[in-house]
Length: 248
Image 1: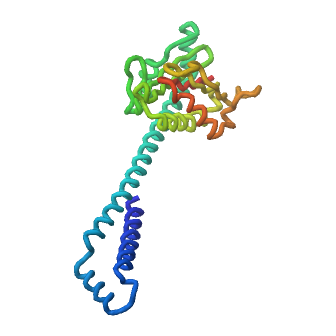
Image 2: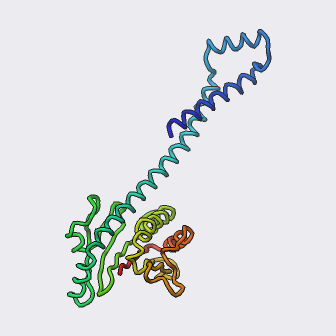
Image 3: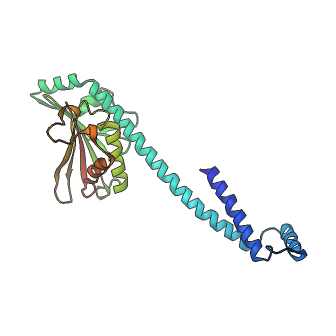
């Protein structure tokens, strides 16, 4: 990015000098023009030229900083989604153990403390108030029934002190790409539960795992970018949304 900015600056300076040389009559031939150019080379650039170059440098720098900030945000979100995928991988490896705990508890069990004690949390995650808090400060709870393990991932938008709509939508899509799609053979379904301000609180449409997507259901194996975008946008008008992964 720095090399690109330097190249652009050199081009700007060249064009700026060419423009000033033409304005001062140096597009003409003759001894007068040569003398002017000689005087300019000894005197250096004028103050107006320097201010013009500095103004252009400032504009280019703002653009470069904005691009760098966007790249860093995308990197942070991608890293968080990758961490979550690793957490899901470790969790599902012990599927039979979690289902056995649920059966021994009468058909249902809250597993969040057991998951924490099993040491599955990445180093920058923590356990607080009965929930797992990840590196993005969003929270997770884990439950199990006789047949299913359910991971509830709570997404908070700006109304609830969380992220802007753009960040929330991008992160939701990254979770889809890093968790839902790679684990579609193990997933029963993935869906969104939304609540708080907004009309139509409750569950949104579902995408079904490979073994459950018959009968006109929306299949994870055929999901498109537009599908993911529309799915994640259902969260934007609510204070809280829970992205629910249900594994068979």
